[in-house]
Image (cartoon, rainbow, N blue to C red; front, side, top):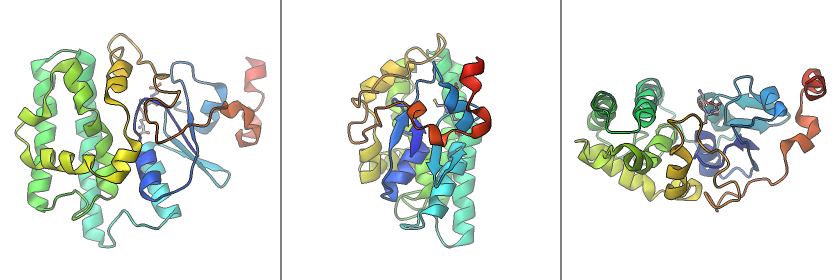
Length: 249
Ligand SMILES: N[C@@H](CCC(=O)N[C@@H](CS)C(=O)NCC(=O)O)C(=O)O
């Protein structure tokens, strides 16, 4: 099971789809986090993967868990050096690219400083692809690193709607070709979120909190039906020592 929110494509969902893992999705309204959610992740963040009576949070750790627990098809290369480089690529995007992405989004207009910051980190991703000389960060086909980086590139049209940031004018032809190829990937197609709903979701980002319930009726990602009942009904998943937290208020 993947605990997630309806309006975003998560790394965990992409890996689960790539491996054909049969799973349920429970969407959480992150503006009104249920008590049980903190039993699963003390940070109160999605995604969380539930498997074999345990749960794993932090998107990279959860995705790595799925890669190891469901070895086929392998998304990482067997070659240790290739694998290490894939980690370098998505580590850079995670440490530098994602914060730059959200800083610009938070500005909510074409802020020159934040635009340059994001462009610089996109430039680093472009250089990675240039040195690699392969169509994907994984190599000749999409793999683990591609799915770790993709969710923010799926969000680029939304970023353009809100801040006018245009990837196609960012002088990154290799990355632009990667994006075009990724859009054709069946896994990406399966997980994709309706672009207009995503913009609707993030339009409130600057003012405080995005609307995390958008698309919870299945309209955002119709190919990935979410579990309708609240996880609160699944009491067995709660940790015994926190089971009374709600009652105590
Ligand atoms: N480092 C975390 C970050 C996850 C994260 O920020 N998730 C957002 C989804 S938009 C979230 O759950 N936000 C809830 C909140 O900030 O209250 C990860 O990689 O899993």
